[in-house]
Image (cartoon, rainbow, N blue to C red; front, side, top):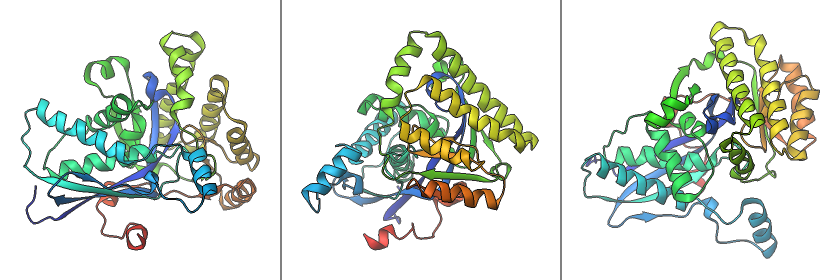
Length: 354
C-alpha cells in the first residue's frame, strides 16, 4: 500500500444491457454499457481492524412502521455489507492461491450509492466491483482485468447464492461500451469470455428509463429458465442462441455505422425475452408505452428499467411524456470512461450530504 495515501476511492457505475441479455449466463453474447448518471463510490481508509460500515442499502433505522414495511416489501432484507465481505474474502483467497504477498494492513470500508435499487441497473454488482477495485489499489495487487469480473461473479453467486452472470461485472470493470462473447469452450476453460471494447461514440440517440417502485430481485427471473437451460430445453437453448445472434448483429451494425439496424434488434430482443420469461405486466407496459412513441425498447436488466433508441428530439420528448405518465424517470445516458472512475469531481453530492 502506498504509505502516503490515507484514503483509497473507487467508483463503479450503473450499467445497461443493450443487446443480447440475458444470454450472458447461458454462453451467449451481449453488448452493455456503463453510464455516469448513477454510481457507487467506495472508500477504504487504513485502520487498526477490518471494518465494514453499513451503507444506505443496509438500513436498520426507519422513520415509521409504515416505512419499514414498505422498504422490506420493495427491497427485502439484504444489504451491501455482505457483498463487501464476500468480495474481500475471495480477494484474499485469490492472493493466497496465486502466491501474492500483501501488506499487513487493515482498512475500514464504506460506500455510498445512488443507483436506483433493484430495477435492473446493477447496483449490487457495482458495490462488488467498486470493492474489488479499491482492494487492488489498497494492497497494490494487479489481478488480470479479464479475471476481475469472474472473481466478482463468484463472490455473488458462490458466496451469497445470487443468480447472476458475467455481463454486469464486465461492463463495470471495463467501462464504456463493451461487446462480450461468452463462448462455452472459452468460459469453461478460462473462467471468462472474450471482451471487446467498442467506441462509445458509435452508439447514438439512446435513452434509459426506470420505475423507482418496480423493485425486484433479478435472480428470481432467471431460476426457472436456468433450470430449463440445464435440462437442454429446446425452446430455451434456441432462444439463448438467438439472443447471442442479436448481440452479434448489433456489434457488426455499430462497427459498420449502420445505426438504422439497431431499433429492430432492440425490439426483437425484448420480444424474444417475453416469449420465454414470465414478464410482469408492469414491466411489459413500460416497454410498450415507450414503443407507442416510436422509440425502440427492451429491458436494461431483468425488469424495472428499459433501454432503447429514439430518432430525434421530438420523439424523445414524446417518449418522456408517455413514460412520465407511468411514473417512470427518463434520461439520456453519458457512457462512462475509465477516467470517470478517478475523476476529482465530487461524487454527486452524496458524500457532502452524508
